[in-house]
Image (cartoon, rainbow, N blue to C red; front, side):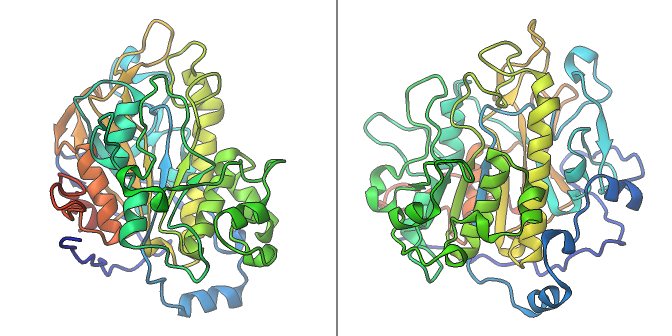
Length: 433
């Protein structure tokens, strides 16, 4: 199967709550405001202890004494529609209003790193998160192009659809659990409509049906969601609620509430359960389409979303679920071996359009990563003062994909067909240093 590079963990311990984190910026220096969140602000922003997640003191002690899981995993949070870098991870508070947009930025737990004001829970956990603020590509500014590049590393040709990274993990790694679960699972299902009817990078391609990512096909917790039937369709035997990783009813009410009673929140909780049960790659598609629903595709007028939708719905939903997922994985000893990648297919234009929104912009955007050996509290790369293009350490979608392979223990230089590597790019090694 070609050569495979061994993944090595960093060996760093977890920062205590009272410790003062420092910001490491790879590339252009970030300006520091001299302060992150204080303890009161941290608690107000939603800092969640292990007790909040439903673990008793004996359970905490038992988990602390248990070595971390040996299998590596990835939870890919696809922020379908392409979130604005300016309204998420790369605000420009000193830019003109038509560039800056309607929102303010807030300090985070890492001095000098500011993010959108409507992400307070993630601001309180920024010591666990690494940001890349310089992702870009020069291909067509359509959803399908970005989705293909991020999930497969290449643009597909009509006769040759390149495999999703979960299909690659299925081939090279297989499932790690004792149950016969698929190695790669899509939640709730694949992306079905983004405007152009070409591949979106979520199939096994030439690897064949055996490695096709398994689609749950229903929103977790919805009326048509049948955990037993889903498990049987996935190749398992339904042995009851506790033994079925698809059954969210086995989780405490307060943990389900912490994630939020939304499609995305329930999917993030299910992703944790599946990783814990042995699935290698779980892709959470926040939406299945960019039309006639609230998504990150904020052109400003129907059938698309507005920046007000960001404030009212998208940012709070994302903030709640992502932050709880990090807490939940950490409380179970899984964050060290599970990368969580929050990624959109492109960014948004650096100037507000005539409808009060922003249009497609692959010139630069930001992503957030945590766990799986990633060192939190750092920023890789930088955009210019308008968030229009990279000015330092530009990162291609291929490098991002190679980093996800690296976190799984897969050498991105592996050649499946003896001709071309999985990804024609190297990982962003700074993330892991």
